[in-house]
Length: 368
Image 1 (cartoon, one colour):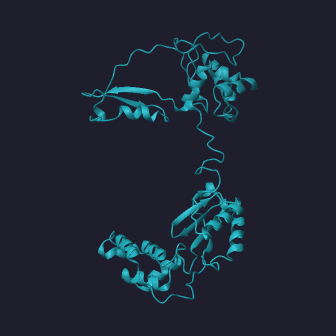
Image 2 (cartoon, rainbow, N blue to C red):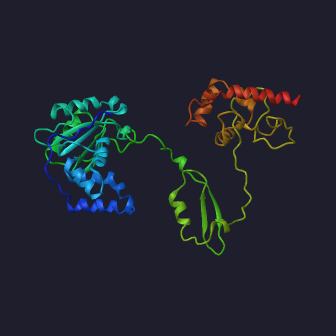
Image 3 (cartoon, rainbow, N blue to C red):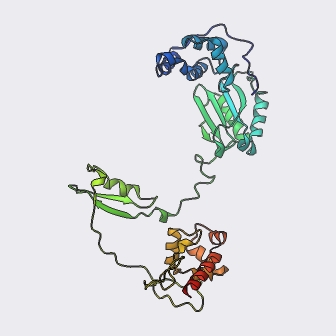
């Protein structure tokens, strides 16, 4: 870290404003009587704002006196942290991020604007309006390149800048206007340019509910099973429930009638038995990979297939390892289009066909 020196020209006196002193007292009161020096960091920050955006030597001494500290201890902190300015700054102090994400997105163009309008960093423009400093990451990488401007209005981020928009922003500041902080293009927050592009399918917001009745309560509690439930639906059923959750008793469930449609034929070997309906359980022959008779195979054994994918494949008539092992390119394309549209390339990437062939072969071997 390079040495940080105080400015050669210093004011002769300084006293806290009533507002600054009150705020420092608030921070000091947070600590025990013998630990109030711990308020040094916020006290210096408040004093810097109060002194016009920088820390003169007399201001640091005033903070040290207030906290009953040796002057050198305060100097050590103020010269170590780059958040403290040791020389005068402009009315609008521009902190320009030059870290890799901003640099890749054009921070050098923003630096060129400041050098043209103000000069080297750590200098103040002739009208006293602007000064600037290149700093490390300010934590808004998704909206690079960006800057932070500190002035009487506070500390605000201005993001998604170009040389042209930055120049226009500085013109407004110098003219006494306050530009709206945030992205300086059409972007909303940190979402993708052009608007949201994900989570647009309304089907993912469907919810299933399990109803539970509480003793002495005429209420029913809706439990959302999926991550994306209907907030309005759930909120209305949870109001004014005064009984502990552990006392809840489930309502007797009505028998459920099977409504699943007949499975579709897809990618099946020519000698496979017809699948007019979902296979019904038969006496099972158990082996290490699961049943090998007419009951469905456990497709979750295949790497990349979880409960959701298994259910979607079953809905399309796919129940067996041998079916997956017999898929051709056209079958894979059709399956991905109809059942796995959200995850293109998953079948090839996890090699489902190879796994299906191996599992089907093991099942046939176990039957011998």
